[in-house]
Image (cartoon, rainbow, N blue to C red):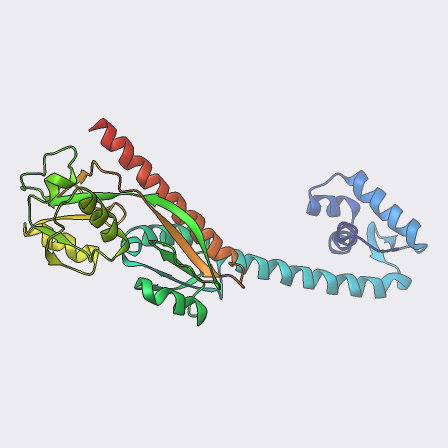
Length: 307
């Protein structure tokens, strides 16, 4: 006969408590169930496990070797449960991930904060990457996952859709367009434009809109990162077009965020190696990040409609 873990638990509870009633209390079960289990085990094994002496149950001589093994099994189960508990808290785990700047500025830190609520002892290595750095980052095993603003074609990399976003126009709070509820591409070109390279994924969206309307895409000031663009706009050096995720934490103080009338929707992705499954920690991070990004876009839509 093979003993089940439940039967081993019953036997050990009687060993510890010394009585059927005490074992039942330890296991938070009824006494008759404990008694029936012991009788069933003894009948199946063909040996008596306990004898009653002085009102207590003590192991029989022939069963002592069994009890030694049971203690060993229980010790290993305790070690297993401890290891599982450590994993659940992220102990001795390091998650390495990267992100393009536009999503790294606000959305990734929000997701990381929630990740630490689930795994308070996890270690994190987070790098902000240029798009062209992402492939090497993954293929050289520097990190497990990269958050991307668009997908590339690569046989060794999987690009999984993350969330959809939109571009918005930003201006200083005292700028003439700050009070507008929406703005068109034709209105945007009336002012000095601070922007990112038209070859950038987001810049390409606006460049295409301007081209289709035969509008000049003239950037007065070009900057690499969205956070830098925001600071330049705050000084009223021009207006800018950025993604909604970069400006997610901008309040109603120094900058105004104006919806663009033309279609500017884009898709974001998470990238990881095709030959490696994501860890549960990376999967949790992606799930949290996707939820936060989708929630932000839904709130923005509701705000725009109410405005």
